[in-house]
Image (cartoon, rainbow, N blue to C red; front, side):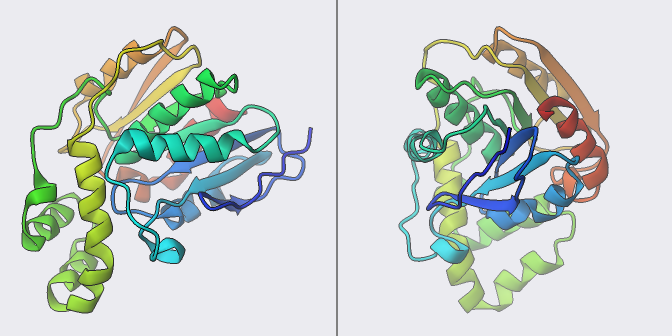
Length: 250
C-alpha cells in the first residue's frame, strides 16, 4: 500500500515513501527541530517513510508563538497527524520528544487511529515529575545545561559570544524546558501498541531503571534496549539506532 504523508504546518517529510511498508514520525528533543532527524532518516531501513514534527518558534516556524504546555502541544500535533489518511504510523521521540510522542499516541488512539509502535529514547517514563525549574533560570544557566548534554559543546558556546544567535535559539529552548518541567501525566487508558524504550548507559538525564518504567504505559509488548554514550548517543550511533527502530516499524 502506498504511503504519501504530506508536509503540513506541523510535519516535515524527511524521506518520502511512495510504496512504503511503514511510516515513522519523529519528535525532536527540547530546543530541537525536524532537521535533528535528517541524518537518522537516511539510516532507517528501506520501505519506511520518515517524517518529523516541527515545533513552533524555530527554523521555518520561527515567527510562530512557542507552546509551553506539553499537553496542548500534543493536542495540536495529534489533530494535524489524524487528518492524514493511510496505514498506522509509528512514533519515535528523543528526550522531550519521547513524552510528546507518548501523549500524541494517546490522542491518536482515542481518535481511533492507534499507532503501530511507540519508540521512546533518553527520557524517564511519564510518571516522572521534573523538579528543576531551568525555564525560570538565566540564559547563562540554560546554556550551561545545553553544554552539559551536548556531545560537542563547542557550537553551544557560540550562544555566549553571539547574542543575535542566542536571541534566535534560546526562546524555543526555554519554552520547551517549561513544557517539560510543568508536565504532569494524566490518568486515563493505557496504550495497547508495542512500546520500545532506548537509553544510553551514561545519560545524565535518564537511568536504565527510569527507562524500564515505560513498561507501565502499555498493555502490549515492551522492549528495553541500552546503548553506550551520553544523552545524545544517537548522534554518534545512527546506524545502530536506526536498525533498532526499523525492527519495530516494518
